[in-house]
Image (cartoon, rainbow, N blue to C red; front, side, top):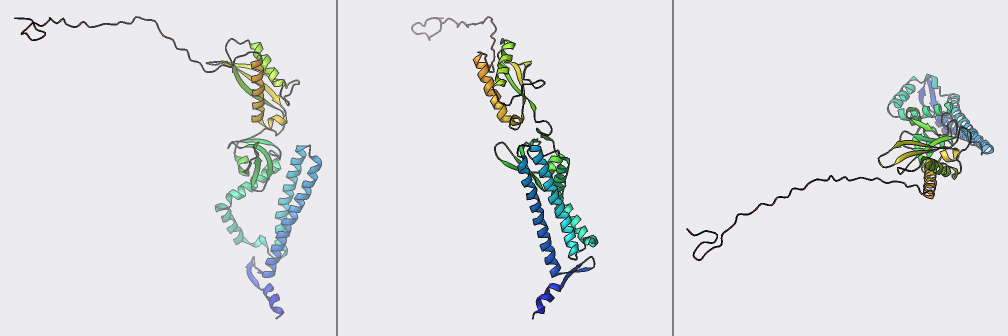
Length: 311
């Protein structure tokens, strides 16, 4: 009776590459793979603890995140291959399994494999890092919080987490506002009424830019006011400013702050912000009025029909 469990564990289930695979071997493979994946997660968490030392340096945090993910994937792949080979499953001789796996990738796992490969490319190229502010072709805009195996988590300024497939960053257009330099130039269009002195408009625009914290004011990074064109109802200008990372990471909020300050400065100087107008021109002329005269009717006499003259 004591030999029954041992015989059950040693019983071959099937053969792979000419080698029998027993129940014990399968159990060992499962435990080994689970242990390897747990060990890979432990390595990633340990590396992430190092990032706490660089809380004020986003680029170092991004490098540590990239290193932890690459280490995790490497331990997964290498550990799984070595572990399966150690328990007697020779993956190099499993041509049938390889063919089936290739067919599965072609039909069901193509997008998954594409997103995984895209994630590896993103991590190796460092074109996208955790903490970057991105604007995708699909309209998603926000901060990169995580680059996972299949997706990248982007958190919008409304604290909405969007899971974007990694392949979208490879195949689509991506605007990375904080890839290299964190300072960015922003354009704020506005219009004033015709007849307003240009210098007064320029003074109001520069004063508005000076009231917003984070607007740069140094050589090569100074604010300006451009006269862009003459519109149907207004003279159109643009307020040009250079913003630091705290403002470029929140473009909609920055635009709202500048518009608020600009409205205050224009009102303080009595500058009119026009609204759409239409002029109606009426041509002078002669109105010809004609009245048709009716035929005169003679008065009726006794015995006659009304409206007829006597014979």
